[in-house]
Image (tube, rainbow, N blue to C red; front, side, top):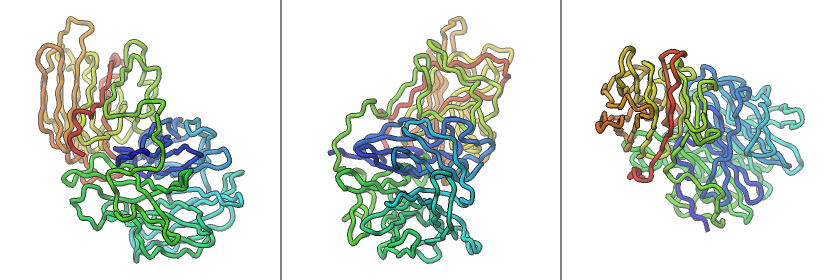
Length: 528
Protein backbone atom coordinates (compact mmCIF):
# COMPACT_ATOMS: atom_id res chain seq x y z
CA UNK A 1 0.00 0.00 0.00
CA UNK A 2 1.13 3.56 -0.71
CA UNK A 3 2.87 5.61 1.97
CA UNK A 4 2.11 9.33 1.86
CA UNK A 5 4.69 11.61 3.44
CA UNK A 6 3.46 14.91 4.84
CA UNK A 7 3.24 17.44 3.48
CA UNK A 8 2.03 15.70 0.31
CA UNK A 9 2.54 19.01 -1.54
CA UNK A 10 5.41 20.94 0.00
CA UNK A 11 5.71 24.70 -0.34
CA UNK A 12 3.17 27.32 -1.30
CA UNK A 13 0.18 25.08 -2.03
CA UNK A 14 -2.58 26.36 0.28
CA UNK A 15 -6.33 25.82 0.52
CA UNK A 16 -6.46 22.33 -1.03
CA UNK A 17 -9.67 20.92 -2.49
CA UNK A 18 -10.02 17.39 -3.83
CA UNK A 19 -12.44 15.19 -5.76
CA UNK A 20 -12.44 11.54 -6.87
CA UNK A 21 -13.43 10.20 -10.26
CA UNK A 22 -13.25 6.42 -10.20
CA UNK A 23 -9.70 5.53 -9.17
CA UNK A 24 -8.34 9.01 -9.98
CA UNK A 25 -7.98 11.92 -7.57
CA UNK A 26 -7.73 15.58 -8.57
CA UNK A 27 -6.62 18.43 -6.33
CA UNK A 28 -6.39 22.23 -6.69
CA UNK A 29 -4.84 25.07 -4.64
CA UNK A 30 -5.01 28.85 -4.25
CA UNK A 31 -2.57 31.06 -6.18
CA UNK A 32 -3.54 34.66 -5.21
CA UNK A 33 -1.64 37.15 -7.44
CA UNK A 34 0.33 34.54 -9.39
CA UNK A 35 -0.38 33.56 -13.00
CA UNK A 36 -1.37 31.02 -14.27
CA UNK A 37 -3.89 30.40 -11.53
CA UNK A 38 -4.97 27.25 -9.67
CA UNK A 39 -2.67 24.27 -10.29
CA UNK A 40 -4.37 20.95 -11.02
CA UNK A 41 -2.85 17.80 -9.51
CA UNK A 42 -3.53 14.14 -10.30
CA UNK A 43 -2.91 11.03 -8.21
CA UNK A 44 -4.11 7.44 -7.94
CA UNK A 45 -2.77 6.68 -4.47
CA UNK A 46 -3.03 10.03 -2.59
CA UNK A 47 0.72 9.81 -1.93
CA UNK A 48 2.30 10.66 -5.28
CA UNK A 49 1.08 13.67 -7.24
CA UNK A 50 1.81 15.15 -10.64
CA UNK A 51 0.76 18.58 -11.87
CA UNK A 52 -1.23 18.14 -15.07
CA UNK A 53 -1.99 21.79 -15.76
CA UNK A 54 -3.45 25.04 -14.45
CA UNK A 55 -7.09 26.07 -14.48
CA UNK A 56 -6.68 29.78 -15.25
CA UNK A 57 -4.16 29.96 -18.10
CA UNK A 58 -5.59 32.80 -20.19
CA UNK A 59 -5.56 36.49 -19.37
CA UNK A 60 -9.27 36.65 -20.21
CA UNK A 61 -9.94 34.19 -17.39
CA UNK A 62 -7.84 35.90 -14.78
CA UNK A 63 -7.50 39.72 -14.52
CA UNK A 64 -4.89 40.47 -11.88
CA UNK A 65 -3.78 44.00 -12.76
CA UNK A 66 -2.79 46.02 -9.71
CA UNK A 67 -3.86 43.39 -7.20
CA UNK A 68 -1.99 42.94 -3.94
CA UNK A 69 0.27 39.95 -3.50
CA UNK A 70 -2.27 38.16 -1.29
CA UNK A 71 -5.31 39.20 -3.28
CA UNK A 72 -6.42 37.63 -6.59
CA UNK A 73 -7.61 34.00 -6.38
CA UNK A 74 -8.84 32.69 -3.02
CA UNK A 75 -9.63 29.09 -2.04
CA UNK A 76 -10.84 27.17 -5.10
CA UNK A 77 -12.87 23.98 -4.90
CA UNK A 78 -13.00 21.17 -7.47
CA UNK A 79 -15.95 18.88 -8.06
CA UNK A 80 -17.08 16.40 -10.75
CA UNK A 81 -20.55 15.50 -11.98
CA UNK A 82 -21.91 13.77 -15.09
CA UNK A 83 -18.76 14.06 -17.20
CA UNK A 84 -17.88 17.65 -16.25
CA UNK A 85 -15.33 19.06 -13.84
CA UNK A 86 -16.23 22.25 -11.97
CA UNK A 87 -13.90 24.65 -10.21
CA UNK A 88 -15.50 27.38 -8.11
CA UNK A 89 -13.35 30.21 -6.83
CA UNK A 90 -13.28 33.93 -5.99
CA UNK A 91 -11.14 36.59 -7.65
CA UNK A 92 -11.24 39.19 -4.89
CA UNK A 93 -9.42 41.64 -7.18
CA UNK A 94 -11.90 41.55 -10.05
CA UNK A 95 -15.18 39.83 -10.83
CA UNK A 96 -15.91 38.09 -7.54
CA UNK A 97 -16.98 34.45 -7.28
CA UNK A 98 -17.14 32.36 -10.46
CA UNK A 99 -17.30 28.86 -11.88
CA UNK A 100 -15.22 27.36 -14.69
CA UNK A 101 -15.79 23.98 -16.30
CA UNK A 102 -13.84 21.39 -18.27
CA UNK A 103 -14.32 17.92 -19.71
CA UNK A 104 -10.64 17.16 -18.96
CA UNK A 105 -9.08 18.41 -15.70
CA UNK A 106 -5.83 19.03 -17.59
CA UNK A 107 -7.76 21.67 -19.55
CA UNK A 108 -8.68 23.70 -21.36
CA UNK A 109 -11.09 25.26 -18.86
CA UNK A 110 -13.93 27.57 -19.83
CA UNK A 111 -14.15 31.30 -19.39
CA UNK A 112 -15.46 32.22 -15.92
CA UNK A 113 -19.18 32.29 -15.23
CA UNK A 114 -19.39 35.10 -12.68
CA UNK A 115 -22.20 34.56 -10.19
CA UNK A 116 -24.50 37.46 -9.51
CA UNK A 117 -25.42 37.68 -5.85
CA UNK A 118 -22.60 35.41 -4.66
CA UNK A 119 -21.29 37.67 -1.94
CA UNK A 120 -18.23 36.71 0.06
CA UNK A 121 -15.55 34.12 -0.72
CA UNK A 122 -14.67 30.40 -0.66
CA UNK A 123 -17.37 28.92 -2.93
CA UNK A 124 -17.91 25.18 -3.26
CA UNK A 125 -20.50 23.13 -5.16
CA UNK A 126 -22.55 20.13 -4.05
CA UNK A 127 -24.49 17.80 -6.37
CA UNK A 128 -27.44 16.17 -4.62
CA UNK A 129 -29.00 12.78 -5.39
CA UNK A 130 -31.96 14.35 -7.22
CA UNK A 131 -29.69 16.13 -9.72
CA UNK A 132 -29.91 19.54 -8.09
CA UNK A 133 -26.77 21.60 -7.42
CA UNK A 134 -26.10 23.85 -4.45
CA UNK A 135 -23.58 26.60 -3.83
CA UNK A 136 -22.06 27.07 -0.39
CA UNK A 137 -19.84 29.97 0.62
CA UNK A 138 -19.07 32.42 3.40
CA UNK A 139 -19.97 36.08 3.75
CA UNK A 140 -20.11 38.83 6.40
CA UNK A 141 -22.95 38.79 8.91
CA UNK A 142 -25.87 40.23 6.89
CA UNK A 143 -27.05 42.15 9.97
CA UNK A 144 -23.65 43.82 10.28
CA UNK A 145 -20.42 42.47 11.67
CA UNK A 146 -20.23 42.82 15.44
CA UNK A 147 -16.52 42.10 15.37
CA UNK A 148 -13.79 41.27 12.84
CA UNK A 149 -14.47 37.82 11.41
CA UNK A 150 -18.20 37.77 12.23
CA UNK A 151 -19.19 35.81 9.10
CA UNK A 152 -21.77 33.19 8.17
CA UNK A 153 -21.84 30.11 5.96
CA UNK A 154 -24.67 30.29 3.42
CA UNK A 155 -26.27 27.98 0.86
CA UNK A 156 -28.28 28.64 -2.30
CA UNK A 157 -29.40 26.48 -5.20
CA UNK A 158 -27.52 26.87 -8.49
CA UNK A 159 -28.96 26.41 -12.00
CA UNK A 160 -26.15 24.74 -13.94
CA UNK A 161 -27.80 25.48 -17.31
CA UNK A 162 -27.77 29.24 -16.78
CA UNK A 163 -24.99 29.36 -14.15
CA UNK A 164 -27.23 31.50 -11.97
CA UNK A 165 -28.14 31.26 -8.31
CA UNK A 166 -31.85 30.57 -7.92
CA UNK A 167 -34.25 30.56 -5.03
CA UNK A 168 -33.32 32.24 -1.78
CA UNK A 169 -29.94 32.26 -0.07
CA UNK A 170 -29.98 30.98 3.49
CA UNK A 171 -27.46 31.53 6.25
CA UNK A 172 -27.02 28.08 7.77
CA UNK A 173 -24.09 28.20 10.18
CA UNK A 174 -22.09 30.68 12.19
CA UNK A 175 -19.53 28.40 13.80
CA UNK A 176 -18.94 25.84 16.53
CA UNK A 177 -17.38 28.15 19.11
CA UNK A 178 -18.87 31.21 20.80
CA UNK A 179 -17.96 34.47 19.06
CA UNK A 180 -16.31 32.36 16.37
CA UNK A 181 -14.14 34.19 13.82
CA UNK A 182 -13.82 33.47 10.12
CA UNK A 183 -15.97 30.40 9.45
CA UNK A 184 -14.66 29.74 5.94
CA UNK A 185 -13.66 27.20 3.32
CA UNK A 186 -16.95 25.24 3.58
CA UNK A 187 -17.65 22.02 1.69
CA UNK A 188 -20.90 20.01 1.57
CA UNK A 189 -21.20 16.20 1.61
CA UNK A 190 -23.97 13.66 2.04
CA UNK A 191 -23.62 10.38 3.94
CA UNK A 192 -26.14 8.06 5.58
CA UNK A 193 -28.96 10.56 5.14
CA UNK A 194 -27.08 13.48 6.69
CA UNK A 195 -25.77 16.60 5.00
CA UNK A 196 -22.40 17.63 6.41
CA UNK A 197 -20.59 20.96 6.26
CA UNK A 198 -16.86 20.67 6.82
CA UNK A 199 -15.26 24.08 7.27
CA UNK A 200 -12.48 26.05 8.95
CA UNK A 201 -12.74 28.55 11.76
CA UNK A 202 -10.44 30.59 13.97
CA UNK A 203 -8.58 32.32 11.12
CA UNK A 204 -5.86 30.80 8.98
CA UNK A 205 -3.05 31.41 11.49
CA UNK A 206 -2.25 29.79 14.84
CA UNK A 207 -5.90 29.38 15.95
CA UNK A 208 -6.92 27.64 12.73
CA UNK A 209 -9.14 24.56 13.11
CA UNK A 210 -11.35 22.12 11.19
CA UNK A 211 -14.95 21.76 12.36
CA UNK A 212 -18.09 20.01 11.13
CA UNK A 213 -21.88 20.23 11.49
CA UNK A 214 -24.73 18.17 10.04
CA UNK A 215 -28.41 18.24 9.16
CA UNK A 216 -31.12 16.02 7.72
CA UNK A 217 -32.01 18.87 5.34
CA UNK A 218 -29.55 20.68 3.12
CA UNK A 219 -30.84 24.08 4.26
CA UNK A 220 -30.73 23.12 7.91
CA UNK A 221 -31.08 23.45 10.76
CA UNK A 222 -27.52 22.16 11.32
CA UNK A 223 -26.36 20.62 14.58
CA UNK A 224 -22.95 21.06 16.09
CA UNK A 225 -20.56 18.15 16.49
CA UNK A 226 -19.96 17.91 20.26
CA UNK A 227 -16.33 17.01 19.52
CA UNK A 228 -15.59 20.19 17.54
CA UNK A 229 -13.05 21.14 16.45
CA UNK A 230 -12.29 17.75 14.94
CA UNK A 231 -8.71 18.78 14.15
CA UNK A 232 -6.48 21.63 15.30
CA UNK A 233 -2.91 22.15 16.51
CA UNK A 234 -3.59 25.38 18.39
CA UNK A 235 -3.40 23.54 21.75
CA UNK A 236 0.05 22.06 21.02
CA UNK A 237 2.05 25.24 21.62
CA UNK A 238 4.06 27.58 19.42
CA UNK A 239 7.09 25.29 19.31
CA UNK A 240 5.20 22.37 17.73
CA UNK A 241 6.68 21.80 14.24
CA UNK A 242 3.32 21.86 12.40
CA UNK A 243 1.09 24.89 12.89
CA UNK A 244 -2.04 26.61 11.48
CA UNK A 245 -3.88 23.37 10.69
CA UNK A 246 -7.22 23.84 8.91
CA UNK A 247 -9.20 24.32 5.68
CA UNK A 248 -9.95 20.67 4.97
CA UNK A 249 -11.77 18.78 2.22
CA UNK A 250 -12.89 15.14 2.36
CA UNK A 251 -12.60 12.42 -0.27
CA UNK A 252 -13.77 8.81 -0.39
CA UNK A 253 -11.78 6.09 -2.16
CA UNK A 254 -13.38 3.35 -4.30
CA UNK A 255 -12.97 0.92 -1.39
CA UNK A 256 -14.88 3.19 0.99
CA UNK A 257 -11.96 4.68 2.94
CA UNK A 258 -12.02 8.40 3.75
CA UNK A 259 -9.22 10.93 3.81
CA UNK A 260 -8.86 14.64 4.33
CA UNK A 261 -6.58 17.10 2.57
CA UNK A 262 -5.89 20.30 4.47
CA UNK A 263 -3.35 23.06 4.93
CA UNK A 264 -0.72 23.59 7.62
CA UNK A 265 2.61 25.37 8.02
CA UNK A 266 6.10 24.33 9.13
CA UNK A 267 7.75 27.39 10.69
CA UNK A 268 11.43 27.52 11.69
CA UNK A 269 12.29 29.61 14.73
CA UNK A 270 8.87 31.17 14.45
CA UNK A 271 9.36 32.05 10.77
CA UNK A 272 7.26 30.63 7.92
CA UNK A 273 8.87 31.12 4.52
CA UNK A 274 7.35 28.12 2.72
CA UNK A 275 3.80 29.36 3.14
CA UNK A 276 0.82 27.09 3.77
CA UNK A 277 1.28 23.55 2.47
CA UNK A 278 -1.00 20.60 1.66
CA UNK A 279 -1.19 17.71 4.16
CA UNK A 280 -3.12 14.43 4.27
CA UNK A 281 -4.96 12.77 7.16
CA UNK A 282 -6.97 9.57 7.59
CA UNK A 283 -10.66 9.84 8.52
CA UNK A 284 -13.06 7.29 10.01
CA UNK A 285 -16.75 7.70 10.86
CA UNK A 286 -18.05 7.13 14.38
CA UNK A 287 -21.68 7.78 15.36
CA UNK A 288 -22.13 9.45 11.98
CA UNK A 289 -19.38 11.98 12.66
CA UNK A 290 -15.91 12.15 11.03
CA UNK A 291 -12.89 11.46 13.27
CA UNK A 292 -9.48 12.57 12.01
CA UNK A 293 -6.45 10.34 12.62
CA UNK A 294 -8.18 8.31 15.34
CA UNK A 295 -6.03 7.53 18.34
CA UNK A 296 -3.63 10.32 17.41
CA UNK A 297 -5.73 13.46 17.00
CA UNK A 298 -3.11 15.46 15.13
CA UNK A 299 -1.31 15.39 11.79
CA UNK A 300 1.28 12.68 11.34
CA UNK A 301 4.48 12.66 9.32
CA UNK A 302 3.27 9.67 7.28
CA UNK A 303 -0.09 8.24 6.25
CA UNK A 304 -0.44 4.68 4.97
CA UNK A 305 -3.26 4.74 2.42
CA UNK A 306 -5.31 1.71 1.46
CA UNK A 307 -4.37 2.25 -2.19
CA UNK A 308 -1.83 0.47 -4.34
CA UNK A 309 1.32 2.42 -5.11
CA UNK A 310 0.82 4.43 -8.28
CA UNK A 311 3.52 4.02 -10.88
CA UNK A 312 3.48 7.50 -12.39
CA UNK A 313 3.98 7.98 -16.11
CA UNK A 314 6.09 11.06 -15.45
CA UNK A 315 8.79 11.03 -12.79
CA UNK A 316 7.66 13.04 -9.81
CA UNK A 317 9.58 16.07 -8.59
CA UNK A 318 12.08 14.59 -6.16
CA UNK A 319 13.79 17.71 -4.91
CA UNK A 320 16.13 18.31 -7.83
CA UNK A 321 15.22 19.57 -11.26
CA UNK A 322 17.24 21.36 -13.91
CA UNK A 323 15.41 23.34 -16.58
CA UNK A 324 17.52 23.59 -19.75
CA UNK A 325 15.64 26.31 -21.58
CA UNK A 326 17.24 25.75 -24.97
CA UNK A 327 15.75 22.24 -25.01
CA UNK A 328 12.23 23.28 -23.95
CA UNK A 329 9.34 23.91 -26.32
CA UNK A 330 7.13 25.35 -23.58
CA UNK A 331 7.50 26.28 -19.95
CA UNK A 332 6.75 23.70 -17.30
CA UNK A 333 3.33 24.07 -15.67
CA UNK A 334 5.03 24.73 -12.33
CA UNK A 335 6.43 28.11 -13.43
CA UNK A 336 4.70 31.26 -12.21
CA UNK A 337 4.47 34.87 -13.33
CA UNK A 338 3.43 37.75 -11.12
CA UNK A 339 0.01 39.06 -12.12
CA UNK A 340 -0.75 39.20 -15.86
CA UNK A 341 2.56 38.89 -17.75
CA UNK A 342 3.58 40.68 -20.93
CA UNK A 343 4.30 37.52 -22.92
CA UNK A 344 6.44 39.42 -25.43
CA UNK A 345 9.10 39.81 -22.72
CA UNK A 346 9.58 36.04 -22.36
CA UNK A 347 10.82 33.91 -25.28
CA UNK A 348 12.01 30.33 -25.39
CA UNK A 349 14.57 29.99 -28.19
CA UNK A 350 15.53 26.51 -29.32
CA UNK A 351 19.22 25.73 -28.82
CA UNK A 352 19.74 29.05 -27.09
CA UNK A 353 17.73 29.53 -23.93
CA UNK A 354 15.14 31.74 -22.29
CA UNK A 355 15.22 35.38 -23.34
CA UNK A 356 14.01 37.95 -20.83
CA UNK A 357 13.55 41.54 -21.96
CA UNK A 358 14.72 44.58 -20.01
CA UNK A 359 12.70 47.73 -19.60
CA UNK A 360 10.16 46.30 -17.16
CA UNK A 361 9.32 47.51 -13.66
CA UNK A 362 11.30 46.68 -10.54
CA UNK A 363 10.21 43.90 -8.20
CA UNK A 364 9.41 46.56 -5.60
CA UNK A 365 6.42 47.69 -7.68
CA UNK A 366 2.92 46.26 -7.25
CA UNK A 367 2.75 45.53 -10.96
CA UNK A 368 3.79 42.80 -13.40
CA UNK A 369 7.58 42.64 -13.44
CA UNK A 370 9.54 40.39 -15.78
CA UNK A 371 9.79 37.50 -13.32
CA UNK A 372 9.53 33.74 -13.76
CA UNK A 373 9.50 31.75 -10.55
CA UNK A 374 9.03 28.40 -8.86
CA UNK A 375 7.61 27.79 -5.42
CA UNK A 376 10.16 27.33 -2.64
CA UNK A 377 9.35 23.77 -1.59
CA UNK A 378 12.07 23.03 0.98
CA UNK A 379 13.61 24.77 3.95
CA UNK A 380 17.04 24.11 2.48
CA UNK A 381 17.79 24.28 -1.22
CA UNK A 382 20.09 25.69 -3.86
CA UNK A 383 18.92 27.68 -6.88
CA UNK A 384 21.43 28.11 -9.68
CA UNK A 385 21.09 30.06 -12.93
CA UNK A 386 23.50 30.06 -15.86
CA UNK A 387 23.13 33.16 -17.99
CA UNK A 388 24.99 35.00 -20.72
CA UNK A 389 26.93 38.12 -19.78
CA UNK A 390 24.54 41.04 -19.25
CA UNK A 391 24.99 44.09 -21.47
CA UNK A 392 22.59 46.40 -19.65
CA UNK A 393 22.75 48.57 -16.56
CA UNK A 394 19.35 47.12 -15.65
CA UNK A 395 19.13 44.32 -13.11
CA UNK A 396 18.97 40.63 -13.90
CA UNK A 397 19.51 37.59 -11.70
CA UNK A 398 17.77 35.50 -9.06
CA UNK A 399 15.13 36.70 -6.63
CA UNK A 400 13.75 35.01 -3.52
CA UNK A 401 10.37 36.66 -3.40
CA UNK A 402 7.87 36.90 -0.57
CA UNK A 403 6.14 39.95 -2.08
CA UNK A 404 6.98 43.30 -3.65
CA UNK A 405 7.92 44.77 -0.27
CA UNK A 406 9.91 41.79 1.07
CA UNK A 407 12.40 39.92 -1.07
CA UNK A 408 16.07 39.12 -1.68
CA UNK A 409 17.63 40.00 -5.06
CA UNK A 410 20.89 38.78 -6.57
CA UNK A 411 21.30 41.48 -9.20
CA UNK A 412 23.86 41.38 -12.03
CA UNK A 413 24.44 44.60 -13.94
CA UNK A 414 26.93 46.09 -16.36
CA UNK A 415 27.31 49.80 -15.56
CA UNK A 416 27.09 52.00 -18.63
CA UNK A 417 30.39 52.76 -20.32
CA UNK A 418 32.20 49.84 -18.66
CA UNK A 419 33.02 46.21 -19.36
CA UNK A 420 32.65 45.33 -15.69
CA UNK A 421 30.04 42.85 -14.44
CA UNK A 422 28.85 43.73 -10.94
CA UNK A 423 26.87 41.67 -8.44
CA UNK A 424 24.67 43.63 -6.09
CA UNK A 425 22.73 41.87 -3.33
CA UNK A 426 19.64 43.66 -2.08
CA UNK A 427 17.35 42.76 0.80
CA UNK A 428 14.08 44.62 0.41
CA UNK A 429 12.15 45.20 3.64
CA UNK A 430 9.03 47.35 3.95
CA UNK A 431 9.58 48.32 0.32
CA UNK A 432 13.04 49.77 1.01
CA UNK A 433 16.13 48.26 -0.65
CA UNK A 434 19.13 47.57 1.58
CA UNK A 435 22.38 46.99 -0.33
CA UNK A 436 24.11 44.09 1.43
CA UNK A 437 27.03 43.60 -0.98
CA UNK A 438 28.56 44.96 -4.17
CA UNK A 439 31.24 42.86 -5.83
CA UNK A 440 32.87 42.65 -9.26
CA UNK A 441 32.52 39.34 -11.09
CA UNK A 442 35.62 38.21 -12.98
CA UNK A 443 34.66 37.14 -16.51
CA UNK A 444 36.41 36.39 -19.79
CA UNK A 445 35.20 39.22 -22.01
CA UNK A 446 36.82 37.74 -25.14
CA UNK A 447 34.92 34.43 -24.98
CA UNK A 448 31.62 34.84 -26.83
CA UNK A 449 30.34 31.75 -25.03
CA UNK A 450 31.18 33.19 -21.62
CA UNK A 451 28.45 32.90 -19.01
CA UNK A 452 27.88 33.69 -15.36
CA UNK A 453 26.77 31.09 -12.84
CA UNK A 454 24.68 32.68 -10.13
CA UNK A 455 23.84 30.64 -7.01
CA UNK A 456 21.52 31.19 -4.07
CA UNK A 457 21.75 28.79 -1.15
CA UNK A 458 19.02 28.81 1.48
CA UNK A 459 19.37 27.01 4.79
CA UNK A 460 16.32 27.73 6.89
CA UNK A 461 16.26 31.44 7.64
CA UNK A 462 19.76 32.14 6.33
CA UNK A 463 20.98 32.48 2.75
CA UNK A 464 24.29 32.65 0.89
CA UNK A 465 25.13 34.06 -2.55
CA UNK A 466 27.78 33.24 -5.15
CA UNK A 467 28.48 34.60 -8.63
CA UNK A 468 31.15 32.87 -10.73
CA UNK A 469 32.30 34.20 -14.09
CA UNK A 470 34.72 31.44 -15.04
CA UNK A 471 37.99 33.19 -14.18
CA UNK A 472 38.77 31.28 -11.03
CA UNK A 473 37.27 33.77 -8.57
CA UNK A 474 33.76 34.04 -7.23
CA UNK A 475 31.93 36.90 -5.58
CA UNK A 476 30.56 35.45 -2.35
CA UNK A 477 28.25 36.67 0.41
CA UNK A 478 27.49 34.41 3.36
CA UNK A 479 24.88 34.41 6.11
CA UNK A 480 22.14 36.69 4.88
CA UNK A 481 19.34 36.76 7.45
CA UNK A 482 16.05 36.19 5.57
CA UNK A 483 13.62 35.89 8.47
CA UNK A 484 11.90 39.05 7.20
CA UNK A 485 10.70 37.00 4.20
CA UNK A 486 8.40 35.06 6.51
CA UNK A 487 4.67 35.63 6.65
CA UNK A 488 5.08 36.47 10.34
CA UNK A 489 6.96 39.63 9.26
CA UNK A 490 5.76 40.28 5.72
CA UNK A 491 2.13 39.27 6.31
CA UNK A 492 -0.16 37.83 3.68
CA UNK A 493 -1.10 34.32 2.62
CA UNK A 494 1.62 33.37 0.11
CA UNK A 495 4.87 31.47 0.53
CA UNK A 496 8.16 32.40 -1.09
CA UNK A 497 8.98 31.77 -4.73
CA UNK A 498 12.42 31.74 -6.29
CA UNK A 499 13.04 32.75 -9.87
CA UNK A 500 14.67 34.71 -12.64
CA UNK A 501 14.02 38.34 -13.41
CA UNK A 502 15.02 41.34 -15.51
CA UNK A 503 14.21 44.91 -14.47
CA UNK A 504 15.11 48.44 -15.39
CA UNK A 505 17.45 49.27 -18.24
CA UNK A 506 15.95 50.19 -21.60
CA UNK A 507 13.56 48.28 -23.84
CA UNK A 508 16.16 48.65 -26.59
CA UNK A 509 18.78 46.79 -24.54
CA UNK A 510 19.55 43.27 -25.82
CA UNK A 511 17.62 40.51 -24.06
CA UNK A 512 19.33 38.62 -21.28
CA UNK A 513 19.62 34.92 -22.12
CA UNK A 514 19.24 32.28 -19.42
CA UNK A 515 20.60 28.89 -20.40
CA UNK A 516 19.41 26.92 -17.39
CA UNK A 517 17.82 27.13 -13.97
CA UNK A 518 18.40 24.49 -11.29
CA UNK A 519 16.37 23.89 -8.15
CA UNK A 520 18.22 21.41 -5.94
CA UNK A 521 17.11 20.29 -2.50
CA UNK A 522 18.40 16.71 -2.53
CA UNK A 523 21.74 17.48 -0.91
CA UNK A 524 20.70 20.63 0.90
CA UNK A 525 17.49 19.76 2.69
CA UNK A 526 18.93 19.04 6.12
CA UNK A 527 15.87 20.43 7.93
CA UNK A 528 12.67 18.38 7.92
